[in-house]
Amino acid sequence: MKYTAVIVSAAALLAFSAAPAAAVTLTFVGQDDGASELGPWANSAAAEAAFKAAAGAYGAVKTETFESATVGVLSPLVLADLTITTDAPDFGPTLSGVNNTTVGGAEGGLYGFNVTPGGSQWYGFPNFIGTSALFTFNAPTNSVGVWLTGIQSEFTASITVELLDGSMESFFLPVNVNGGAQFFGAVSDIAFTKVLAIQTNNPGVADAFGIDDISYNAVPEPATWAMLITGFGLVGFAARRRRAVSSVTA
Image (tube, rainbow, N blue to C red; front, top):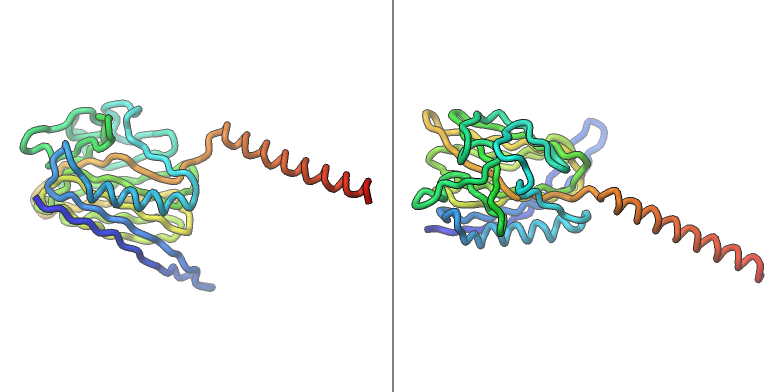
């Protein structure tokens, strides 16, 4: 069993017709090639931790674990803060859509599986030629991170992640040879709302894989917004009081 981990950073430039605007993007990659569905996935977890630390500079980081999603739903999958739309076929439990079952035993790491500690659910993608998944966030985020499970280079030729707005960058992910788990994350100083993941098969073969634990900058809950607004109001009120007192005592 081979384990590799890479954490890299890159600065990218996005050219406009008028004047160039610079985008700085950090990418985080961890691979646990050949690991079983039971783990451990030390390299992927290390990459996720580094990603979350960097994403935290842009606010709280939330992780969608699929644990509260309805089992069996494939596309569109409407979640609390994002919607996933995919062209993957529906082959039922253990392969397609929201799953709470896993192919175990010797082949457990060759298909999609759950990576959430204490969880059981994940999101599956079987295909014949290739598949794409569009992640649409309800509000702009400066980060996106995702676990991929069961990817094998014998079947999968390439995986590409594209930021369709914001910095509009494309990232080419490494492909595990023997399945297992891997993590990819990107943190950009330009916020985005749409991310497209494209998986392409090798000719004449098919792959079945999964994703889990999608992380991104969270949208503040209504109660949090109310607290923030109240806090700003109290600060403004205190400032006005200070000015009023100063004018009386002057």
